[in-house]
Image 1: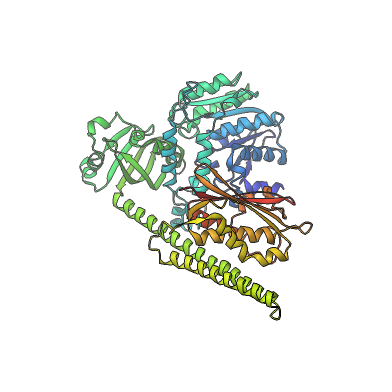
Image 2: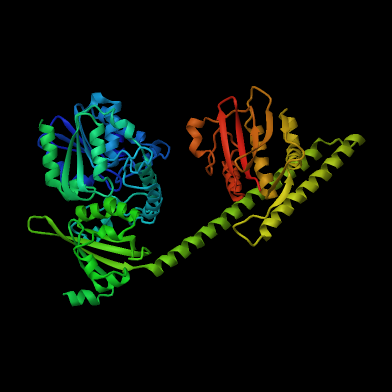
Length: 268
Length: 353
C-alpha cells in the first residue's frame, strides 16, 4: 500500500524533524517548484514532496479521467498519503490550484493538519458579474487559454524520453531533460487546466478553520491582488503576506522573503 | 554589440528578472510593428502575449527559466501592435550574478508562420486520413456482421424447413425471398458508401423507421424465436428519419442482437423499442431485461474497442465501439443506462433534419 502510493505520487521524503511539512505544486510543473524553499525545512521537519497524479513523474497508469475530473480526486490522494505515511499535525503548503486542494483537504480532515500555507491562491479565476467578484479573467479568456495550452506540448511525445538525471559522462543527454519539469501528457494537462481555471471554490473558504497564511505577489496576472484580499477576507483569522515580486511563483522569483514569511508563520 | 543584434536574422530581446524589457532588436520591432522607444523600459514581456500566453508564461516558461536556467523550443503566439498574432518559437536563458541572483533574461524569437501553416495542413491531412480509416473500419464491420446475419438467417430458414411439407416449403420460399431482398438492400447501401467521394458527409436517405426496424427483426427472427424473446416495437408507421441506411441497420442490428445475446438465464428476453424527439434529435431507445452491465465499474470503457463485460466467449468487444463510431459518423451519439440483473437501455440519437 505504502509503496504503491509512494510511486503513484512520486513522493520524496527528506529531513530530520518529526513533524511533517507537505508541499503541493500547482498547475503546470511538478515538485521541482519547491527547490528554493523546501530544503530549508529539512533541519526541523520531515519534508514531503510529491507530484499530483498526472503531473511530473507520478505513475502515468494511476491517472483516471473520472477520478481527477474534480479537485476531490487530488484531495482524496493527499488525505490518503497523510494516513498511510502516518503524518500528524502536518503543515500543508499549496501553490495556486493546490492551495485550494490543501484547503479542501483541511476541511475534510481537520484532524490531520495543523497549519495551512496558501501560495497565490485563487478560489475562482473567472470574474463574476453577479456578485462583482474579480477573478482576473473573462469566460472568453479561458477558451483562448485552453487553445494556447493545447497548442504546446513542451516536447512531450508518447514515447517519453528516457530519464537521465545529470549524467556527467554523457552531457549530450542532458538536453533530453529540457522542459521536463513542466512536461505533461497533453490530454491530462488539458483536464487539469480546465479543472484549475473553471473551478469556483469561493464558498469553501469560510469552512477553512486552520491557522492560514496567504502569500500574494504584488504583480500577478493569474491571481491579482483583489483575489488575495478576497481569500484573506473569507478565511477567518488568516494572515496575508504580500511579496514584492512579479509573477505567480514567489517561491521561485523571491524565495528569500517567501521562506522567511513561512518561517515566521510557523514559529508563532 | 547593438549593431550585431540589430542585423541578426531573428528576434532578440532582453528583460530584467521582473520581465521589464531592457533591449529589443530591429528584427523584432519590425515583426511586431512596434517602435523601440515605446517598448524599452515601458513594456513587460507579458504585454506581448495573449491571455492564454500570459498564463502559459507564468505557469510554464518562467518557472522553467528559474528552475533550469533555460527554455527551448517554446511555441507561442506574440501580439503585434495591431493585435494580430504571430506564431513564434521562443528560446530563453537566464543570467545570474555572483550571488546567484537572476539579473537578465535573454530571449531569441523565430517567426514560424510558414511552418505553422504547414503543421496545420499536416494536422488536417491526418484528420482526413482518420475519417477515411474510420469509414473503412465501419464498412468492414457492416460486411462481416450485417451480411453474415443475413446469411445466418438464410441457412437457418433452410435448416428448419421440412421439404415434404408443402405449406412449410411455401413459407420457407417466401422467407428466403424476403431475405434475399434484404441482403440485396444491405449490399446496395454499402456500395453507396463506397462510391461516395465526399469523405466528411455520409450519403443519406429518408427511411421509414418502422419498416427498417422490421427488416432488422426479420434478419434475426430465428434467434428471436429460439431464445423465446418478445419484441415490442412502439414506433408509429409514419415516423421517418434521414440518415445513412447501412449504418442505421448496423446499429439497430447490433443493439438487438446484444439484447438477445446478453439475456438473463432466469427469464425470457423482453425487448422494447421506442422513439422520441428531443433537443434536435430523434432518439431510438432499445430496452431489455437482460444481464445488465455494472456501470460503476465499466462506465468509461463501455464503447471502447475490444472491451467485453460478461465473460461471454463469443464477445469480441467490437460491436458497441463500432456502433458509437457509426453514430458519430452520422453526427449522432449513443448513450447507455444499465442495472445489473435488471436490464440495459441504449439510446441512439439521430440528428432531426
